Image (cartoon, rainbow, N blue to C red; front, side, top):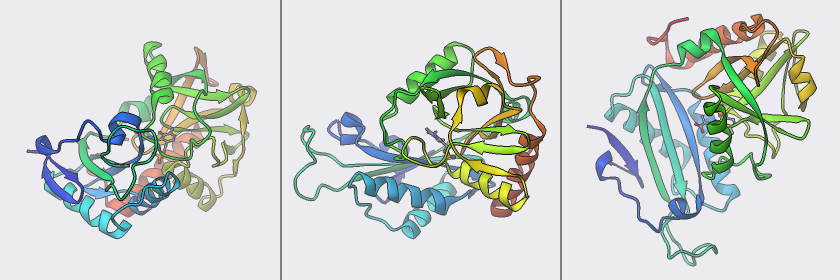
Length: 289
Ligand code: PDD
C-alpha cells in the first residue's frame, strides 16, 4: 500500500482526493519540488525546501509549515512507503475556491500534497550520455519560480521525445537558457560554463552542487550566458537535474558533441557527485558506475 501526504496528514494514496476547483488543477496556480531519495534518505533536502518556500512566497502562497516541519513530514512519508531509491514529488496550490482568476478572498488554506515515486538511478544515460534537440524557449520570464505551469516545458520535452531524444535544450534567440527539465553546462578548454541563475532559468539544486564541487576541486567554472555558437563548439556538454544527476549530452540536433562520447570533465563531475551523495546519504546501495 502506498501513502501520500495531504495537508499535513499521511493517508492512503488512493484516498488522497483533490477538489475540481483546486486552483492547482484549474490554473496551475502553485509550485512544486522534486527531491531525490537515496538509501532511504533525502538528498539536499534543505536546499529543496528552501527553494519551495521561496517559490511559494514569490507567488503569494504562505506555507502552513516550516522547513523543519516539512522535513519531518517527508521523512515520515519515506519511511511509511519504504522508499529506498526514488523521488518525492511535492506541490502546494493556492487552495480550493470558486473559479476566478483573482486570488480567493479571505483565508483559503493552500493544498499541500506529497507522494513518493520508486525509481532506480538512470545508469544507462549516465554511462552512455543522451541525445538532445534545440528548441526556442517560449516560456514566461519567471523561470526561477518552480511553477506548476509546465506547458512550454512539456511541449519541448515531447518534441525531443518524438525525435528520439532525451531532452530539449532551449534557447532565447542566440542564448542557451536550460533544458525542459534540466540545467545545461558546456565545457570549453577545461572551464565549466553554465547560465547564470536569474529569472530566465531555474536555479537548479543539482547545478549548485556541481558549481560547488567545481570550486572545491579546482575545476575552473563560470556562470554566464552561453551562445548557440559556443554550444556548437563545446568540448563537452552535460545536463543536470535531481533525477538526471550529471548526464552527458552526446548529440545536439543530430550533430555529435565532439566525438560523441561522454567527456573527461563530465565523468569526473559524475564521480564527485556520487561522492557527494554518499556523504549525505551513505554508501550507495544502488550503484552501477
Ligand atoms: N526538474 N530546470 C528546469 C526547468 C527543471 O524543471 C529542473 C528540474 C531543473 C533542475 O533543477 P534541480 O537540479 O533542482 O532538479 C532545471 C525536475 C526534476 C522535474 O520537474 O521533474
